Each structure stands twice: as structure tokens, then as C-alpha cells.
Length: 173
Image (cartoon, rainbow, N blue to C red; front, side):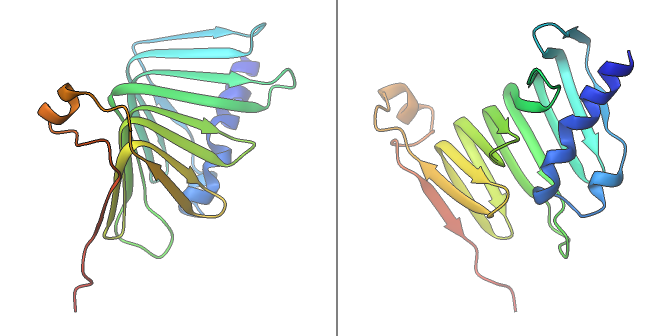
């Protein structure tokens, strides 16, 4: 059980670049209908209304899979949902940064979050949407990509024409 607690603790320590400087000092709380740890494979799977909180950080989804290296270092976190959501309050801001997608992948070693399928990121008056959005948490860079293979159903369902959408709100005076 002690190994399990240390694995959980490592889960969000790498999210530091995207959060309040005090978030990393807060306890991690994970709720799910079920949790399954496979120490040999280095995988923990949470299913059913998964909710993760650490300070101002909140993630939600239907299923979260956490992969670790042989040395028990966080490797990849995958959150799936309808949609999976992420929000956090940056330092010096009263507005939450928010993200949602059908799948979110976090690569701890690369400081990279990849949002795929109906991906949306909102940051202080900016809104990015596309098929795939990559967010470099260390450099605060966003790269968005549309889906050039968009089918008719996507257009009918209002998910767009396969292009990236960026909305910039004017600053309030």
C-alpha cells in the first residue's frame, strides 16, 4: 500500500508548470468508482466518474490510466471522458485555465499535454479548438491542429470543418 501512495504522489508533482505555485504543496485527492494497481506492469487504472483534485487543479473523466517506469517514475497519464476536463488557477490570475477533450495524455518527462478529439483550451480570453492540441507546460506553448480527414458527420454535429479555431476576446477597459 505504501508503494501505491508514493505512485499517487508522483502523479501530479509534474503538473507544477501549469498550476499555482502552492498547488504542488497540497494533498492529491483521487475519487473513482474503482481503482486497480498492477505493480509489475507499472500501471494504475481508475474507472467510473474519476475526479482528481490538488489545490486549484481539478481533472475529471470516465477513466484514468497512469503508467510508471521501472523506477516508479511517472511516465504517462491518460484521461478519457465525454469529455475529460482539466482546470487550474495560474499564479497572478483570477481566471481558471481550462481544457477538455475526449482524451488527454500527459507526458511528465516532456512536460507535454496532448488533447485529442474535440479538444478545447481556454486561457485568459483565448480559446483554441481543434482535433489535436499540444500544450508544452514548461514553455507555455500551444500547438493546435485540425482534422484534414473530417467527415460529413463532424460538420453536421457542429464540430467544424476540420480547421483549427482560435478566438481572442478583446481586453476589457
